[in-house]
Amino acid sequence: MPAIDLTRLRKQSARLADFFFLPDEFMKHLREILEFYVNYTLRTVENVAPGSNLKTYRTPPAVLTQIQNELRAKAEANPHFALELADLLWDEGALETRLLAAYLLGRIPPQEERLLPRITAWTQQIRDPEVRVALLTTSLVRMRKETPDQFLILVREYLHPERTRTWSNGIQALIPMIADSDFENLPAIFDLVEPIIEEAPSTLQYDLTDLIVTLYRASTSETIFMLKHILSTTENPMTAVTMRRISPDFPPPLQKELRDLLRPQPLTRPQPVEADDFVDETEVQESKPVRKARKKKMDNSRIIYLHGSDSNSQSGKARQFAEKFPGMVTPDFTGEFDERMAQLKKIVGRKKNWTIIGSSLGGLMGTVFTCTKPTQVRKLILLAPALLKDPFGSYLNLEPVSVSTTVIHGTADDIVPLDEARTYAEKFFTNMKYIVVNDGHRLQEAFKELNWEEILGTDD
Image (tube, rainbow, N blue to C red):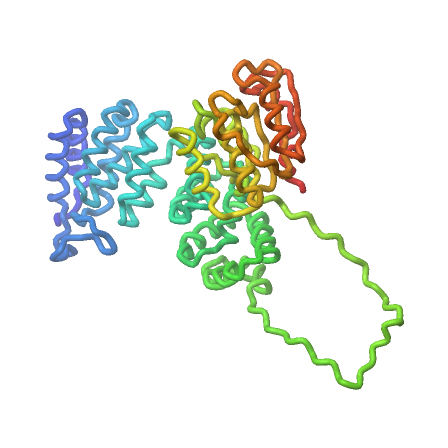
């Protein structure tokens, strides 16, 4: 490999950028540059990056950085061409070309509807750790900064309780946001990651270490409080085990704060009572004052929102619920009603204590699920539920249940008649509160005025 002459490298990179709108010519000149800077002393017989299945030119990072700098302005000004070029670079299959593809995705506006499908598909395909991290950090840089709410919705999908395989993606995507000194919504991040840290799967040890250290640097006191709370209240024995394994990589002050909680607890055995001991049951024992149990914060990961037939997880209500209750589940449902119910059952699984919020057709889904699986549901909230004989009569042959249920319906609903829905609701739910509001089917005004914490019973 020749020594890097920065003047020559700048000229080569500028020349390469001239072919931005000619993808085939661009790829031809890119290969020439990468071959020019090949580090033959490091190339293996297989020419594959270690820990990866990708071919590599062993190009120095400075070369890729200069190329990226030259492409930045054109990619931002021409996102359509940048996306096409990113596809070609990805299909080329080399470590360097895929890193460039990830970089180009990061210059595309987050409103581009083809951006997220690319990132989702590519993160599922890739095994190389360097490219994966680039997709979760560099490719999401504009979304993270320009549309943080949209970014957090994506992270919530990664950290969904039933998608443990994508938890690592969610953690890696969050770390740059936490480390950004301009980001101020750390409480939402703590609520989001607390269930993951408590679950503490051993396969995520390295990810959890990076996450906790980054949180500690961003907010020392809040991180210590969260970790102490988790370790003091969790019923998961693996939490302390995993934390004990990774704690040597924590900053020394954090290790000191957690030392007592991470120390293995000795097993204690009850002492046998001597045979000649006598206990006078008539003796009045001095009773200790009973400490009032602290209310346990509700697990937002067990709140799920079921959208309507023509809606999705990006609807206004879904986003507002996700903002009010960080970490809750707001999945997309597609297809006919039976298909949607199958998708819901797969998400919920066998877990219990769910709070289900169903809107319109989602209200019918929540009703059918609750009436057939009442032991899995803590509370049901129905928003203008589509409890209609036509066309859903075949789904309404249900047995009544005593699950705590709140129905909210508007007097101006021109899609689901209030009286018909209420008749069915009164038949199905023996423990129900019916709230009638002066609003339409979408309940836009009512949403702003209602106390959702009280309705969901988040303080129960």
